[in-house]
Amino acid sequence: MKWLDQVRVTVSKEKYEKEGVFKGAIGTIIFSEIRDNQFEVVFSNPDGRDYAEIEINVADLELVKDNELSDESILEDLPKHDPRWWCKVEDGYILNLLGERKNKIPYDYKS
Image (cartoon, rainbow, N blue to C red; front, side, top):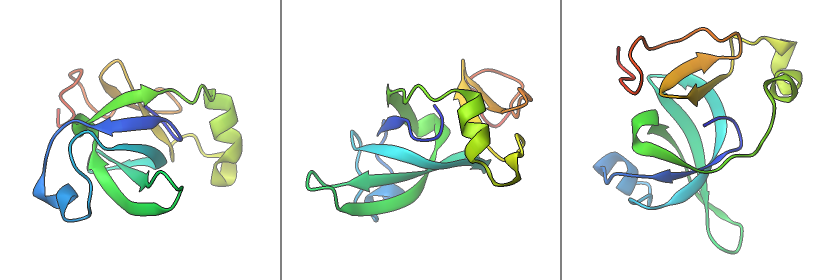
């Protein structure tokens, strides 16, 4: 999972539901600098209007559609082209664009 990928919420949580986001909702990652193991995700109505923009825990998301952007093209769009600023989730690891891992154990995002 990375910037502009489509993702699905896999759990029900009061924090999400207060914002109108329920289990099964599909959104798009719009900010992927990992803070507290979360991505910023926007959710839209069928007419294209956004109804929620919230941080969702990485463990509560699954990939629906890969945007197929390369790390290089993402890096070009980053302010100051700093590869430490942007993260992705790959094979259970939170990685920055330098390949540095945030978690030590795959799928245990708090390790």
